[in-house]
Image (tube, rainbow, N blue to C red; front, side, top):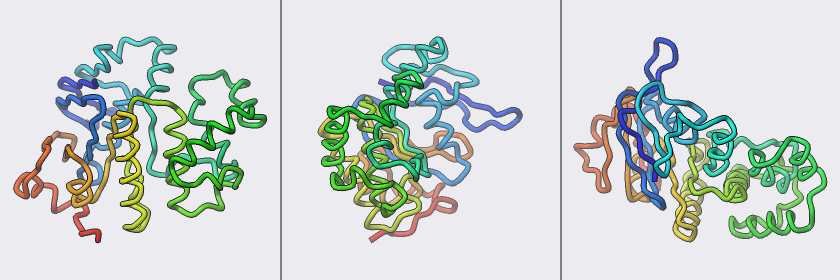
Length: 250
């Protein structure tokens, strides 16, 4: 369980988040919506301790994140996969190498370098099995830059799964792809979450996709929590309509 109590985050004189109260249970699927600059990325980075709250309390499984040592923080982050908006892949590496990077936080630099350059048969088999789950096993040895946008999305998901996390955080991973690919990725994460009891929190600009595919919608505006609902009404979403992208995706 992830619990935020009166969490705020400031960057010098700019307050990105203010007084956030939120509880996320294991296995939940949550769409995080709001206009650009509303604090969605900041909130996601707080959830995996890339940022530390300026005020308030963030606990994961009753452990206060702010009190963790650097070593404990490294272990903590390795249990929470983060998919950035640009997917965070290394284009020049092979697909299997990008997937192996999912465990970069669990090993020393030289050990991780060995795994990337000289992976064992068992490691390649494990990567292949995950690529089968996301539907692109034949791309194991392909250079990542040669893949389509949708295939690269699946590599990013495979890398997150290889990390063996309890939570996947995704920062607008469908913002730069066509509607079919957007729906395909969301359905894939939904299936994986259900099969593995993984928590998924995805920031997404399109309100209709959020309503259609996520059981719970959390909405931010100007760093303030405006919506937290399992069945948001039009009146609840209306304050976000003027700034969020609300075009219908067919």
